Image: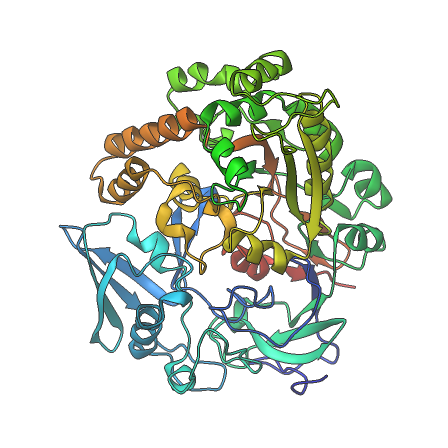
Length: 546
């Protein structure tokens, strides 16, 4: 269906033929007119491109703030409050002025509806108030030196539209009103959509792309079949043997693979089978699984060499090695090292034997020990990793199978603890704190949050450290807390870290210039919805002259 008429350019005559950037930020099964930034799965061009943030922290420039809807922020001396100064002269895409009331409304909305709070700000926000026409003050429940990093992830929506929305969680927002550069949904069908210029964008003179085109891509095979045609300008997907299956086809086909975070195997500590649940609660069992894994083989086959084996038993990314305590790393290295003989010995000690001599170990009751590894359908590197893990587990006598489901089902099943084992990656963070917070804070095991902590393992010591980190006054204190978190998570072997991935980023120079790359590392270049810096990237692009 077509929702709106074609887009026009703001502040200048419309070109005869709009400049369209084709991008693939994620895979989806169904294209729907859902541009609700609070939804779990809105269309992948909703954040940043429709709803511009207050500030973007540039992770490639030591988290330097790049001011967007805000022009400044100041923390109180006691760290119990923060004041945002807002950019004046900004308008919503319907022409109405952006004001401090919109920010107060947006930050207060997640307090009123906690199921919208996917970034965990309600635990920190006591109240939000308008100071004057262009300033907003957020009073905190306790000191937090890093609160700006979280607050700016909360979407800023227009009060004059959203105050009449009865249920913000289910509202699809088919005709969005935003402050970002691309707010007009000019065409939407089951095969994709086109999203064009905001006619009132405050930085229109710096924007040289007229429209974004998102063609529906359902899975990795679909993507690989089409990427070689030159259809896509900007993508971020796994391509096996990328030199051969992409870069070799044209000098315009380029890629960059900056380091990213870990892929972990998760145990469901709430799994339905009580015997398997009791087994998962045995640290010795979790370590046995870890020692059965040939990590380099996973990388060589499933990731086609794109990654490095995890070395930290906590799963902390190698890019944060300077935060780690080398003593902790070495202490738990044996459990991150392939040692199937020791893995079998640990299973024997736990009483997990092959009683009937059929080659498979049974539970103490005599029932088969059969595990299932859940992965999202179409994620070929994940699916291959899961398949290889079943073979590695078979080598120590554990029967396992893979289960692939659509991504929305994957996320839902993890949120509802409806799985046994699962694979997940983690968003890249500005510091290791992001990984530990998303992955191990028990507060993040509520359904409104993403999948990362849905192993349902709880440790009050970890929760306490996570509470202390944002309030730490010095860099030394923050380093000490991260090292304590690393030690605690590693000592428990809560998950099985497999390998550190890379950030998949492909760009086609046939139609545009200005791409961020290894020689021009301005900001994080990936197009994924979890990367706010993608807005900086699109503003840097220029169409190639004929």
